[in-house]
Image (tube, rainbow, N blue to C red; front, side, top):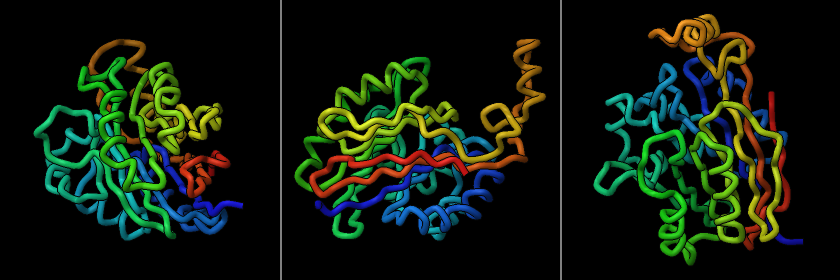
Length: 258
């Protein structure tokens, strides 16, 4: 039997309630599933948008190995102060010249693991192509990494699914973020890539995707400007554990809702 490592990917952490439930639950999840590495999407962790230096420090102190983000990383100027941190990623396919890193390679339990952060384009900003950006990064890292993991921060399920087929056999794992709704389509693709369209969110489910439900309903009823606020209550962690072997193939996927 080949050597494997279990990698935990946690869905978008929304505000203080999301940070608190993650703090409360993370060690239990790690122990129960014998997790060897933790990735968390933190782009909504600061009041629902972006991240701050203090929150990043809090995440790393809690045992999180890599923080991924998405389109909201640019919404708080405080985030720009920490984009030089190699383990705090922003989507790699933003135009050249922007601050920050789009991928990071770390060693865990004898595995060289590359985490790549990409962003979709359908119903989002028309930035550079995530498919072609993956191709370019893959050529840079293929000889330096045993395992390649992609957080594809995207709106459209079709784009995420197409991306999974595009990278099958090259990426070890592709998980989607951004929609805050966990999908039930976890699958190991024919060439060994573990795939799930979206791993959901970590925060209040007494909400509309993490924000105050009354304000969200009012927005849909009136189509007027409404202030969105982070919701609290009925907090849960959405995540997935991917068991990956030394050859970079996923052997098992477990969705987590707790």
